[in-house]
Image 1 (spheres, rainbow, N blue to C red):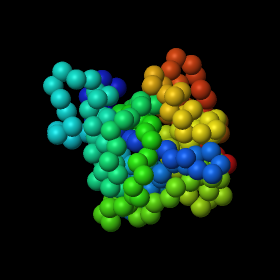
Image 2: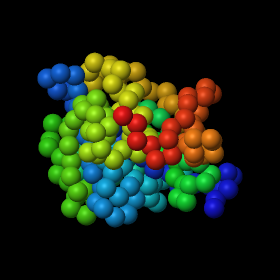
Image 3: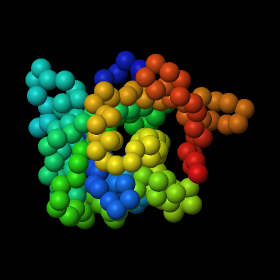
Length: 203
């Protein structure tokens, strides 16, 4: 098990938004039934690689470059204007610990072309529809994806969502043992935001 002071790998995740007849949609990809997040629906993204790093630049800039690169590799879309949304820090108990930055971006007009090795399926859906599919047991969403989608349901269009971002929120995840079982607890910025079931299957 890693320790709280151990340097963590960093990743960048990109939430692509596009206008729709009613509001807006986000691009979600289903991971293959192997590897990280096997079978889950996630946003494009991945870990920072050596080519993404620049000496003297902030970690968020490295994560931004990783998000841009991974989006191109996973779904064939070129993006360059990303707005920081949040940073997720994993609990000490996690077997694999990665600090992940989430960014919002307007989707280009090009249609996504999924990588056969990294993407089993893609879908453009409204945040509410994605949450409904998870609640019905059709999709698997992990906490960062679920919470990001839940936050996005508060916006009527992509422009308002993009304009509201810019100052990233911090989510520090912790694991607690309670009378109801093991739960995820997280702190949003400096405020306690609540707890989530260990298996995380909110409706």
